[in-house]
Image 1: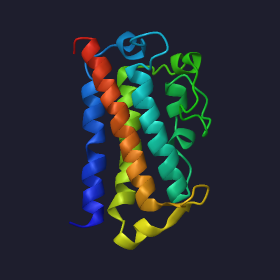
Image 2 (image 1 turned 90 degrees about the vertical axis):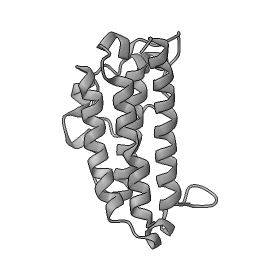
Image 3 (image 1 turned 180 degrees about the vertical axis):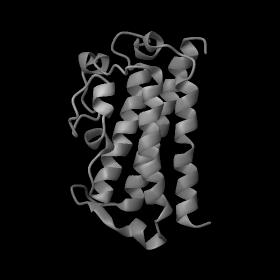
Image 4 (image 1 turned 90 degrees about the horizontal axis):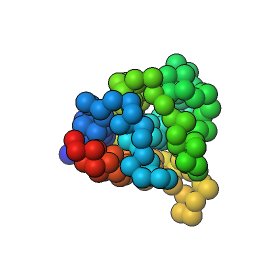
Length: 168
């Protein structure tokens, strides 16, 4: 199997898992934390989409969908390209308020389309390209893509757990 279809398969698992966590819940269920200081489903799905958008935009050297389109407003936030959820306080987490549940999946779908296009064009030598020299060893494109998928899937596992707490 070539690297492109393999990564498309991996990333293709993210949207359906997000849909399972979100679909059928109302905004209160999506935005209420399961316990004080814990992350609600809406924040978890928003955050994984933001990370994928942020990181793939960096890899492609283009503007984030979050900044260039109308997504931030639909979440009640400013289009700050650095706001990905890292370092969020409980108040910051609570400020992520989608207008409607579908906005979570629509934003993720927009990010996924761009990621899919990038992955479709990948060749094995591309994976060795250094994309971040701030680390020792420097981070390659392949390692960054694995990191993005890993982060997404971990947050989706958390969202599924919270969904289960709601009885869904």
